[in-house]
Amino acid sequence: MDVLISGAGVAGPALAYWLRHHGVTPTVVERALQVRAGGYAVGLRGEALDVLDRMALLEQVKALDTHMGDVALVDRDGNQYATLPAPIFAGDLQILRGDLTGLLYEATRPEVQYVFGDSIAGLEPDAGGVRVTFERGRPRRFDLVVGADGLHSRTRSLVFGPQARFVRHLGIYTAIFSLPNYLALRNTGRLHNMPGKAAGIFSARADTEARAALHFACWPLAYDRYDAEQHKRIVAGQFAGEGWQLPRLLEEMSRAPDLFFDANAQVEMDRWSSGRVVLLGDAGYAAAPTSGRGASQALIGAYILAGELAAAGGHHVAAFAAYEREMRGFVAEHQQVGREGADWFFMGMPNQQVLDKLAANVPDGTRAQIVRLKDYAPSFAAKGP
Ligand SMILES: Cc1cc2nc3c(=O)[nH]c(=O)nc-3n(C[C@H](O)[C@H](O)[C@H](O)COP(=O)(O)OP(=O)(O)OC[C@H]3O[C@@H](n4cnc5c(N)ncnc54)[C@H](O)[C@@H]3O)c2cc1C
Image (cartoon, helix red, strand yellow):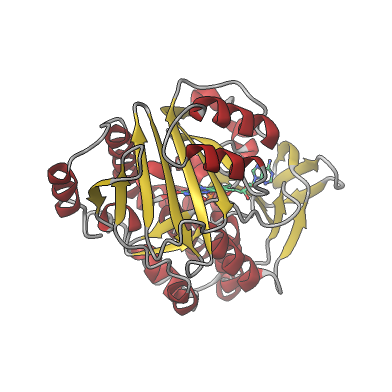
């Protein structure tokens, strides 16, 4: 069976791992020239840790835990007025997104063909497969195509229709970039709230570096998603004239090589597959960074999709239906958390009482554990003709 995966973020390489486990060697096409390392930390929760354990990656992930502690909320002069307890944002374990994508890529690289710097251009289904044309490479035929190409999925647009039909904007933009840990933060961060905006600095990589996160409330903006200089201008315009560390942060952003800038948005779809094409991770069901669940559901979705394909002996119709059945409730729960997280953002400057109450009510993982991880066997190989 020939499977094409579009996107080498979290979901794509994780699916490649599990397909290999079941005896299928996929091809992964990634638009970027290498695995994208940008972003801040992603929280990993519940069954996602179980999936990583089954991939024998949990110990490596644990070794890269950011161990982020409570974060100080500061006013425009840098004076602390409240503490944001770590459980609100950190998950069971928190790892830099780039560390996670790097681990998943390294774990699959020896056996999976990665094609960087290319993208699907067209998908033409026929009776027994899908003819795929690429922006650069030669056309190829695949049995199945998996869109794991994130919030702005090209696969989704080609097969299901325009992005606007499925993407729900939560009214917040986020910019994240690396900078020196010039505040000498130790496993902690500083967060400064302004009306409709927030700026944070967090230590990273055993305090040798830092990441800045700038968030602002805004209706959907029109801009070129691949023009980092334009993104910097938009963000700088939003934070010009603000106090605290903003002048320094904007200066650091202007020379940052890894700016990540995107909307906090969710993807809502009635179905995640059409014929031989299926969506995985943010492409099909993004919960938004405000959920803190995107990476977890990408890992779990990859495990279940590959497992159901194996269990169905490669019969994609049955497998895709089972994948949706297993995932739907779990995804709905995460998207709810994502919307609540966005509401929280608009709360302004919360006092300590509100923050403590929030921390006390953070789901301990049980709320997110409504997905079952079956033991998927036999594999394609065992069931093959
Ligand atoms: C650079 C970056 C930084 C991020 N930072 C954070 C963060 O700090 N905190 C947070 O909560 N979430 C962050 N996210 C989102 C988070 O990674 C996802 O919510 C989650 O991990 C789900 O993973 P995914 O693999 O479905 O999607 P993603 O991680 O978004 O991966 C999608 C991949 O598909 C690739 N791609 C896109 N279009 C095409 C195409 N046409 N052809 C081929 N490949 C394509 C992208 O380059 C990317 O590598 C970030 C995403 C990116 C891309």
